[in-house]
Image (cartoon, rainbow, N blue to C red; front, side, top):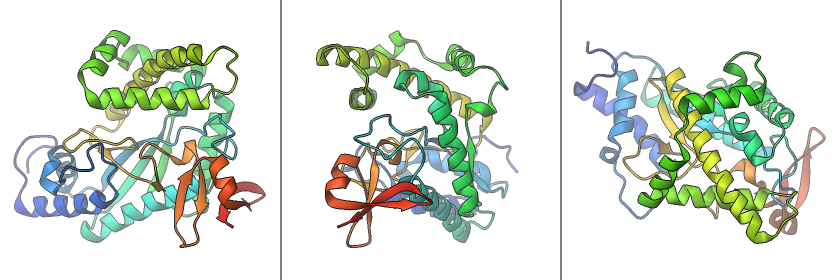
Length: 314
């Protein structure tokens, strides 16, 4: 049997199993190139990652950076704790792992790599809010019996050091330089789109800025580079801790990328996530992510366990 991670071509049975698993992911792909055909063979990196598990008969491990914390903008979210948007998303991810078990008997599990602490200072969310968010994610997973999911965050790294020191150490060890990122933004359309998307989110989510609009935009452009630096650092740390994992992303990804973009819930904007929005239960039974201020106009607030949860269409 070939050692894990080699480039030895997989046996036909391994190829079939990997293709079957990838076909389950494709309908939920969050694509940066939605108009481009995306057959199974267009994702050689994911097929290679899957083959590392299938060759040895091990359960597949997915890693998904995301679920950081709620946006600080009250125009977008219902509060700082996970709500129905997160519950629906986690349930979907758990069901996806269960479905993998129907085409690949050893099954799959997913590590939710909650990344709020890694850039909390840059997005102006206090660490105690991020702790509470991550703790409630773990509690939600237990309550809902989502046995294929687990949560990993910065508290699992570097022991009991203060968060600022943890962030500094991770940044120093893994983050690219600002100069490298600036060059990449100029040369790569995907990185440029990510930079612009993060800048937009930072501008929308900043609620305590007292200067001019142009000054805010300048500051957010600078912070956006910091967020990308930390995000890259977190991704490299995850890859080091979970070297065999199939790497997923909540950001749109082009075919052939090292990460596979995954869509959690319906939204008009491909960049919208449960932590940047609220969720509306539509009359047709579907669920849609949108800003709180928009959902309030379309539905009535629903409480779950005494806390704001989502909006029900009026």
